[in-house]
Image (cartoon, rainbow, N blue to C red; front, side, top):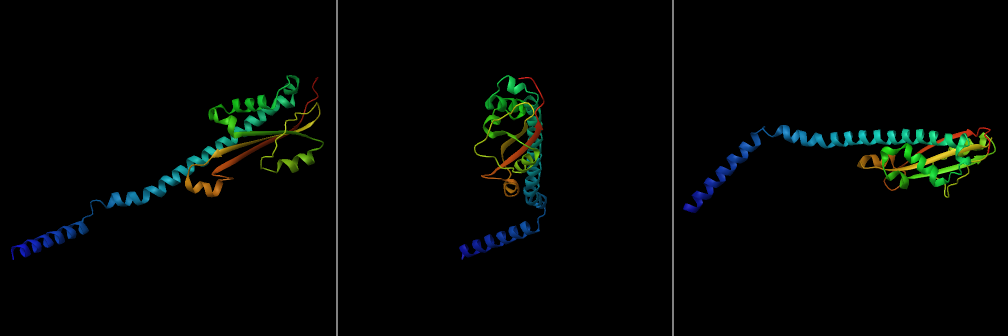
Length: 183
């Protein structure tokens, strides 16, 4: 009989505690914050990552244009600049990326007979395999293309931005006619 009395009191205490817990609203704000914080943090991370992709894109475009000037003026041809040295020159102009640039960057430098061929080739935003290094001669029409693979971190950005394997291939190009420099 005493055991039954103890069990009844325990059930009553448990029921009262459960009723108090159900009525309590002190933790409601914490629960609401937990539910809202995950999508909010994903959105913030996506905005930061998208901003970084744009920053890398602009940096690559400016570096390709600046380094391409050495080809246009004949400086690269006169100094017998190699493809590796030209790649290093582009990476130096994107120094904020650190040592990762050399592995992630692929350059393609080709000459064309007319600008119609350049526009058809420049529209292709996939890296050619193999890449070429032909800075041309005075008066040559040159297309310099750069491809930079940027790893994506935000889970939902992978579906919208990835080119392959969770990475985004960022593309920049410049086309010009070499100046009539002395060789």
